Image (cartoon, rainbow, N blue to C red; front, top):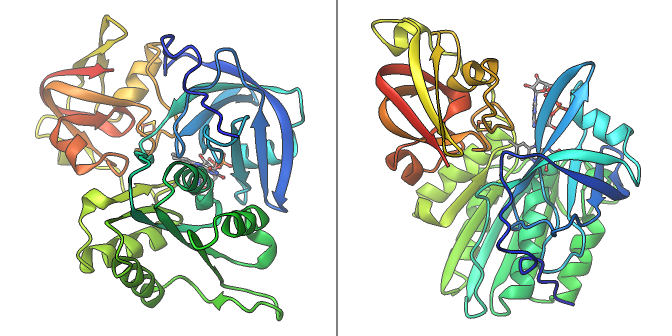
Length: 366
Ligand SMILES: Cc1cc2nc3c(=O)[nH]c(=O)nc-3n(C[C@H](O)[C@H](O)[C@H](O)COP(=O)(O)OP(=O)(O)OC[C@H]3O[C@@H](n4cnc5c(N)ncnc54)[C@H](O)[C@@H]3O)c2cc1C
Ligand code: FES
């Protein structure tokens, strides 16, 4: 059955900055460390693209916490939207969501966002290369389901790394998909610490594996290839470098970072010769807000202190929830991994990692 959830109440656009409430319908334990939370459809239905993420807003120990979680479902296939959360050792929200969720519980979320998405067309004859590790499979699962149902002549190859058999999220669901779409979905599981029964690929995903995987795809005779990468930073860097060396243009590669090791923050002196507090004007939902930003603050931090309802999620330059366009002035971005080269050229900045550099800084948040 094909669910076209995009149709419902299309005119009423969700305000990306306005939290909505979702009620948990089902909690599915995928692995000892990962849980999928399926939500009841709100009214109007949740309007999302496969590969996008939700921002979960929790109040824990009196403090607001926001975290991004990718939708693992496809609006073309799945009647209910879901996210999959993997525990992070010592992680506050990932453990809370693994331990304290039950059907009927309500969660506050920001509507779907993100650019880890594909354009589907029934005439496409693409070969998609999906490279994932651990929880990186989450957005890729939604993409795979959507491609297989919307593009009958496209193929998907998945290279998926994990530690052990019992840590493979969606192992059975992926297996069923590969049987249902025989010849169109190929899966290579690779484990670093497999048990004695494991007959599949072993070891870390290294350059050799990536070269083989990419070369086979490039030789597949497909009209076009597209790559989607989501996993730990090291694997993503390696895969990105290997794609570049193989001659695959960046325009055919889409990346989703869940986490990056924090770069050392630039000092005020490195950013500007005159490290002083500067005024910044932000245009948000038809209103202009002018506030001061001191050299030790990002524009988002300063705006939130002024109780301006600026959008944000990860606060680490990855998810683009805080994206704005610089109309005038100059800023310094500590982290811009969430933005594409085109977005940077078009003047987009991330308020959560931007600090004033000079000029009359004006930012339009769309
Ligand atoms: C766009 C986007 C989509 C995401 N989708 C998913 C998803 O589908 N499933 C999922 O499980 N997670 C996803 N994440 C990661 C998620 O948002 C949280 O960062 C993660 O759950 C950790 O939150 P926490 O509160 O448990 O850890 P925290 O308490 O915030 O962090 C604990 C420590 O771990 C470090 N850390 C934080 N995240 C990571 C990480 N991923 N790897 C290594 N170290 C880390 C922190 O720097 C800190 O030192 C996504 C992130 C982004 C930006
Ligand atoms: S809040 Fe995620 S990039 Fe700024």
